[in-house]
Amino acid sequence: MNIAIVGLGLMGGSLALSLKKLDFIDEIVGCDHNEKHTKEALNLGLVNKIVNFDDAKKYDVIFLAIPVNGVISALSNLTDIDKNVTIIDLGSTKELIVSKVPPSIRKNFVAAHPMTGTENFGPTAAVEKLYEDKVVVLCDLEDSGEYQRDTAKKIFKALKMKKYFMHSHEHDRHAAFISHMPHAISFSIANTVMKQENKHNILALAAGGFRSMSRLAKSSPYMWEDIFTQNKENLLEAIELFEHELSQFKQNIINDDFEEVNKSMQNGKKLHDILG
Image (tube, rainbow, N blue to C red; front, top):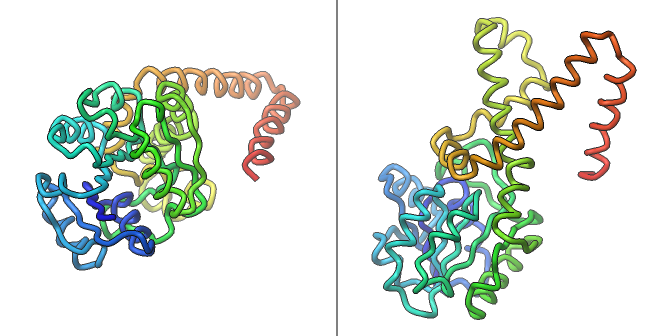
């Protein structure tokens, strides 16, 4: 099986590192509009060679490891692929992407979201085993071709990922709460502190708690602007519910009702009983 990865950043680069370990993968090539990324990917040995987008169409499996708008644009230029080619996108939102797949290649397409990543980006951020033991959500799989479904499942199983299946709309709402809202909050926390504290105080006092809460603010603003745009309605719902929760917490502090503050914290602590 020959693989073409479009997008050689954290997700695409890490995917390449993991795919290289699989015995049924013969060749892995990369494609990226960023010339710096292609040079770094080659120097790091992430892919065997760099190809242009038209050449990527000739490969058995095409991974689209690029921002959501890029995925939609790429799909519109893949209508001339062979019927046995499998296209797998790794976008963080799914409903809009699925709705934009040209009907002529809908069977070729598998909508996937690996629930993994770091706050870093670019080929130099690639991490081996980034995908191992992580969840991959496969959406609207009933609309993909049988061969393409089997191909995607085989690859993700070989990567030691845990597969979950859901509708794209359902995925996007869940992702807004679990992933997208926390990123929005992290950017906001970082901006709040930057506007109140000078660099010296931040360096002197920023301990584990602040670093943990603000870590996601290191993520690519361009990628997250794309995600926030595509999942706007679900994100706004999540932010509004968070604002309500924070407002209640604030009001209990104003009222010196620390029994309710403690109860709220005890409830929040239960999340990690679920996460383990």
